[in-house]
Image (cartoon, rainbow, N blue to C red; front, side):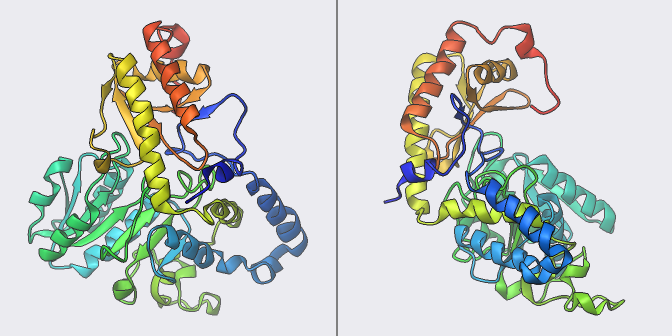
Length: 397
């Protein structure tokens, strides 16, 4: 059994704060600052440019990618790190479309993260020639899969509600009709069990600053199924995806396997932070994590539904159908979240009316979530949220 008391001790959480927003930005593991300081002072500071060789900087995307790969069920050498999630979505989509060049439709759902939809729409406009993005309600995705679909692009866990798609089922159905799949695992990696190899996933992407705790703007990852890795041609043919980057050829030749999905110079300081943050996962069983997450969610939900009748559950009631978060609806959701933050409980708000709470057993206890739920109910009962300062919207909500 995983010792979550031990993992909690590895995080540097502010005193008096209950943090229920790790599904948006993970907190700081204690040893990350030291590791990044070492990369700055001892590697960059003393080795200068020789750090690319002497400190192994050039190998970080693959080495850290393998560590992330273990959390999503990916085989060695099938995940690489770098760039942002939007870039990785674009790469995966463009490569998948080229592999299905006789088709023109990307299928997604209305619960997908908007940036993924923006990237898909932009790619379709760039390609022209009848390419289109088709979106349907989340529950209609399976029935919308037919032989016109080139690529199914889905975020496994809905960022607003926590609704979880049946990944294995949809992949099997997509393959039946000849479509490829691109999965966004931003709210899955480090939150729920994922098995990209076992589900025969074609492409998967995700960020690292949520449940993997790499820090704001941490690098994204991309997985390409080994059976496809030598076929794909990256639309963004960056120099570090070249077969021999330091030959400085004027013509692009793709690197081996997933390495061709590298684009530009890797963000070394961010990769150092992620590499250190992943140490927290040593000895953590993802099935234990999932079981504990659901226990924490149920404890929170029971208190909220008993004491906060104004809040409507927006997440699926069946725990098997949601990720590692709970969401509620209220027309004054933003103000309620601001009032909670003022009381030391950090959740977040998503337009138009979603209060969102993430449950991360690595650093959250039963006592934490019970106290947080009780605080929420008190704020609702006493209308503490109904103050001018709580209604004023900041740039980041």
